[in-house]
Length: 244
Ligand SMILES: NC(=O)c1ccc[n+]([C@@H]2O[C@H](COP(=O)([O-])OP(=O)(O)OC[C@H]3O[C@@H](n4cnc5c(N)ncnc54)[C@H](OP(=O)(O)O)[C@@H]3O)[C@@H](O)[C@H]2O)c1
Image (spheres, rainbow, N blue to C red):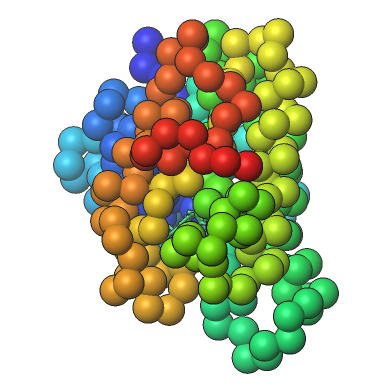
């Protein structure tokens, strides 16, 4: 029986390549997209390659949209094996103010990167419990690592973006807490940094980043497909463990 995966923010960028890679691995893949037309276009592009993909409208900022998406998955499949919390934003990259601690910026960033993830997990957890091998992959960032923030040799050392960094730090905290709460179940919860990936997350990122989305998606999919004796509550990138 094919596994069922839901990926948030999968209409473009890393999420789209994660969808392609999972579908190529034989997983029935559901593209979550806040714009239904973009989601369907992305699913069409992958179906044209012979892949088993569908789309569902899913705005992680909207509780009713998240609930409707979970109901859609339940009605069509009755369970979920893999959830990839990929949708994320970095609005500080286009902010007009250089105010270091802007409450509105923190609220906006946390709404999608943290509360959006909590909302999706809340709604689909009953479906993941129906799977005999549930997996949650939280797409975070080395920029959310406290160890990295204190390391002058890090390529990200000079980068500010405190709301983004703190949102990914919080998401890593969710990974640890949830992995512990679910340790008596088959569900595994891990944080993954895809590396510096050529997407439109921030202006200039497409030109400056090191990895193609195709390459960045590799470790995301690896953690989505880990076996029953694989890790839970970890933070990894393509080189191995990332320090919290
Ligand atoms: N690129 C990197 O170098 C890098 C490094 C580390 C971690 N990451 C993380 O990787 C993830 C994917 O980023 P990316 O680089 O692929 O960025 P991207 O190209 O900007 O894609 C972001 C995706 O998230 C979606 N999204 C944003 N807000 C949403 C919402 N409220 N509800 C549902 N979907 C929403 C976007 O949808 P729309 O098309 O509708 O805007 C888009 O599909 C993010 O969590 C990011 O923090 C990226």
